[in-house]
Image (cartoon, rainbow, N blue to C red; front, side, top):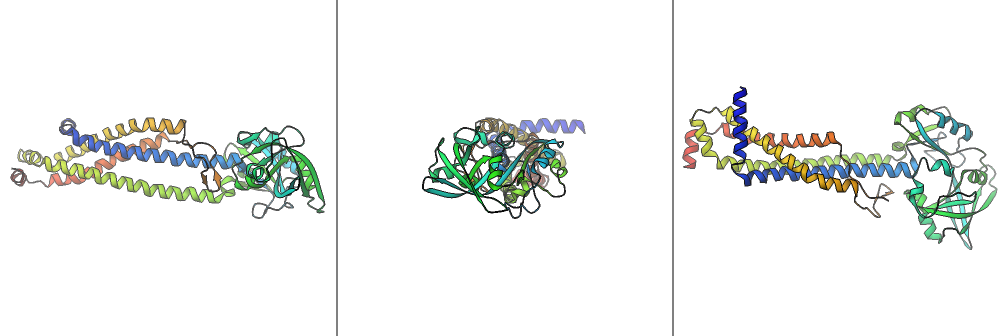
Length: 402
């Protein structure tokens, strides 16, 4: 049996190069199919990675801790009363890499005779840079250092014509009494967070300044956390507080990713069908051209199963050569797409603007799986031709060709 398979393998390899043009056409179809699939796979995964990165590094972090009910209906009165104690406990928990307390509430920014409602955001600037990439998202100015330094969203700065170094007055109402309190600040920097709401309306100040303006004491509305694993978030649950991961905080993005996976699967199916039809057409042409050869082999006593085995091995060889060629074609394209990236200025997905180039990413296990799938597809399609070869009658084949 081993000798039979060895002989069939040698004959198959020789046969596919008897017509180099046809062989190269088939291999090119497999190669281009693999190139298209791998590039699409890498870009889709890269887009998902970039989207998640923009969300988690822009505002959501890996998860957030809030008072019960705050996520469903954000209200300045719904807060973690013992903010400092909760924050210290979270920072000391196993698996927590960083945590930053935040205060949010309505406010009013005034400069000269102009004023506008804003989203007041109070953060510990030293801690915030450990959970977000805001320092890298500054479009002008510098990271706040002084007690009266503030950041403003890019769109807010444009609308109110705010300049770096310029003054602004921020006013907010005390949570319990409604009394107004104001503070004069300096615009240290203009930031593009990536969240449309914050870019349009955020006035970001020191945490203690926001707590004083809202008369919150040490209370917090949100604690943003970075964790080693999503399982750590569940361990942070405790009475009087709610923990939500980024998927729960941005369900639309999760749903969009699932829809994208379905769409991509459908597209892969279409590409696979087109590829299968092309391979079948090429192998059918080969069957017609070699009909006399098959007739002679049958007349000499070659068993149908051995002919079918030879056809399948030929298809396997074609698939392997095509996949190897496809990997060679994909390598430079992927190298460029994964290192230089594809610029996406102004592109917004799920309410998140892509501020950096899109980098493709492939998983080696997936590359091997797709390559093996294309080889299997080639062999499976060749099965139709192999079955037809087993039905060839020697006399009829010789008569038709002759």
